[in-house]
Amino acid sequence: MKITAQEEYGLRILLRIAGCKDAEGMSIPQLSEAEGIGPHYVAKLTRILRMEGFINSTPGYKGGYVLRLDGTREVEFVTVNFFDSMEAVTRFAGPDYQVPVFEPEAKELLSRSEPIANHYEVRAAQ
Image (cartoon, rainbow, N blue to C red; front, side, top):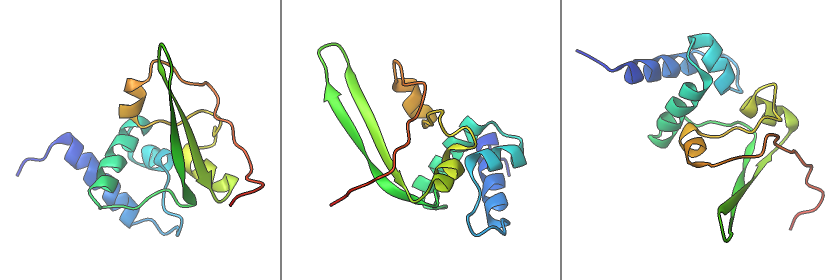
């Protein structure tokens, strides 16, 4: 039986996650380092695995919004994500959490992006 490289890497990631003893699971940077696969490719593979229902991910992620503003020359998007702690943000984005994280497919569609991801504490909510 022949399998593609993408299928092999996906299986390796599934096995690595299944063997993880940490209740928090593994982050994309951790999977990347453990398997010797680039983080952007790991993000792509885990997205596919998540969309197909093989994995659940992002412990501490509490949802979010994508806001859109149609300008005269371009369309602007602002993403607001909610996490239960800065530790959860670090698990999601890695130790350099001020660098914005994008799915590879989304990044390809952007003409530009902000160089820094700002993090705020929610003080009031309805």
